[in-house]
Image 1: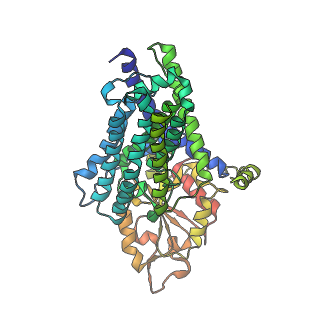
Image 2: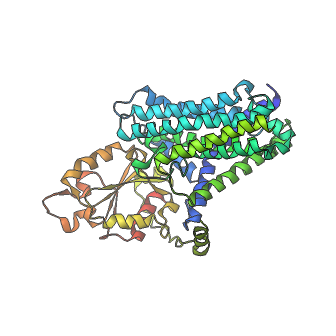
Image 3: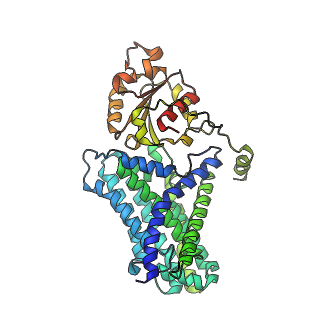
Length: 315
Length: 161
């Protein structure tokens, strides 16, 4: 555990927790402007969270511990990922956890906890949302693993910090076929995993078309605040991962104040730009029919598989 | 896609400039919400006239969302219930249950003349009463149907923005 890793382990979660609701606010604002609306302002998600934290906690009749633990587990796993993944610094506070498989498993654990909570409410929509989320998750996780694995092949390590530093030392790799294929696969997977259009519509009011929202229909007050914060954190974590795997420039490699400031600014700019592009892209997209989603995700898995093949044969 | 982009460019901003904030008679429970009000809409037996106006109050022109109000899909996520129409016999119990499902502090807004005093449907055989007879009402928005400006004005009293 190096000094750089410890600093990163403190700065990253603070930045992600404080910044991810703002990212959601920026994305809503971009969408509002493109629709000709004025928008609620960038700080609106923080206002929503503050209000939700002050509200009454409701435990619906018939729910068990699974329902109560899920929001905590979701926030906790996102927080651990925010600590270990190389966002601001190339070194990690807990290096063994900054592993490709550990990070993907942690993110999947949060999603599974929420799906179980959706089932635990015993409502029709909770179960429906959980089953849809599991269908998507089962297709997304292999792609996520294989796409990042394509990058780790040349590095000879599944440690995310090692992958990021090796890209820093050899920038030409970003334009290799393996890297480009993996990037496209990863973008599709991130859109699906964070519940954005065209896979899921985050602002829908129709229960029948919901995926993520359907699972959290029964949450109220502080529990809902935790879930909304965790969803925002997962979005920033995925966008940060995408940014730093393919464009790691700016990340701090030494524990000097200047390098850390540049690292923080680079992350904010990269994730902010990706968020704006994602929000602007959503204006042009309609939601995909649920039965067409597996086709999209199978396509992205194929790209990820080609990326792995390319990284072996075209290296 | 290019056509849509050109449309976005040429149309620009549709939202009308924000009118002056309403006189400060904010319901006491709304002060705790601090500029963020999630709303669940309940149709208790409306003719859908009020629904059309609520739809345009949250459309691009009046843009109710810019004041911190947002429609949500579940009463558990809501701070306020937006109830339209007279309460029919079949909707009296669902309305009570929806009210119970909302976490405190909670508010009820009666939208339209039917919700306030049964309007033209007063005394009809299927009517259980006005919204105030079933659940406590904090704010009333008059009109048959109320104009989107009136609805947005009412919502701004809740958000205080």
